[in-house]
Image 1 (cartoon, rainbow over the protein chains, first blue to last red):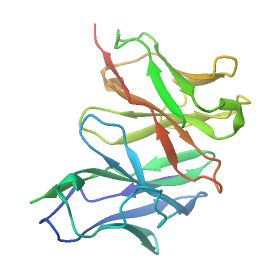
Image 2 (image 1 turned 180 degrees about the vertical axis):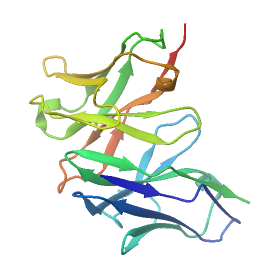
Image 3 (image 1 turned 90 degrees about the vertical axis):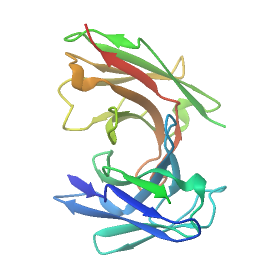
Image 4 (image 1 turned 120 degrees about the vertical axis):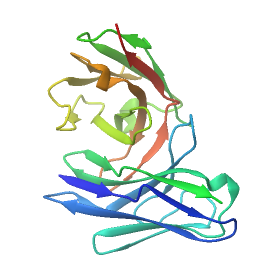
Length: 110
Length: 121
């Protein structure tokens, strides 16, 4: 199985960049190339903003970008905007049609 | 455009069985993809409970496997969740979602709005 570790919170000023890490510890199977990121606003369902490590679904602003190095994936929000405040979750395919989510990171815009 | 909608009781007594149904519109459940249930306890993160393919192949998170059953009704274009012997720890918002076959569509691309289930006597 797999476990994904994210920082509990990050913050940044309007217009700045913030980066959220997602570090995987894996015991077997799965694929860390199947990393996706979700944005969640209070009271709303999560919404995918990055998939397959660095791909953006249509309609997602290009200020959101993803990358991966070794067992750590990262989500960067460039040019932070007020509407980017919320919770962000990474997700990875573990094995046997089971996906694992990270614990979530709260992004605060100062 | 695919839409998912959860339905079911918002209050369940401890030790009883939680039952939810996800109705899918705008896409045939038999056309591919896997269909999953994800929950979020108050103030906590996301946890996949399991997923199912339209042929009935179900896969469960080992942490809940002994108490969870996911089934599909292709005639109604729905899939369902049952969690037995619930406790207060099962109080959560339950989401249904669509995810592609690993290696094809590797993310949850559509979500229901969520259904809050409270376990309390």
